[in-house]
Image (cartoon, rainbow, N blue to C red; front, side, top):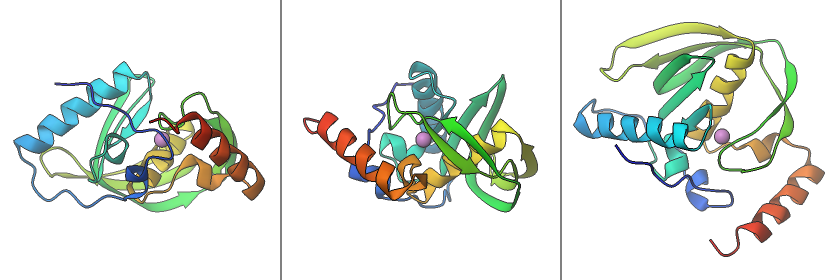
Length: 163
Ligand code: NI
């Protein structure tokens, strides 16, 4: 296992999107264990593979002792709306209010390729929605008002110019 570098906005790899996982092999298992280790090291509740520069549909989540490994996740249904503050490992130190569904039905595969289909409700629905966004290159900043987005974009670009 290895802790990987978490890419910070405006790193372009965060905008690369992700492809479906098709081989459930040793390389995938290595990626998954690196993602768990990186997420715990970074003290996040979720991490998507594009955040460590790997353009694959893989997400790890640990929220209140519930661990989820999502491979090729798809949101099938969503319901309700809730506006709450959230953060992202790719926007260190930034917390912004974002409106998201408070109930999602999601299908995904586990590390052996077996399918799951579950309904998530409450804050965990938000975490699923946030992490699955990363797989289509959608970021926290894209949910903000144009004014806030411009402000945060400038701030992040200034801060991370040297990187
Ligand atoms: Ni994030």
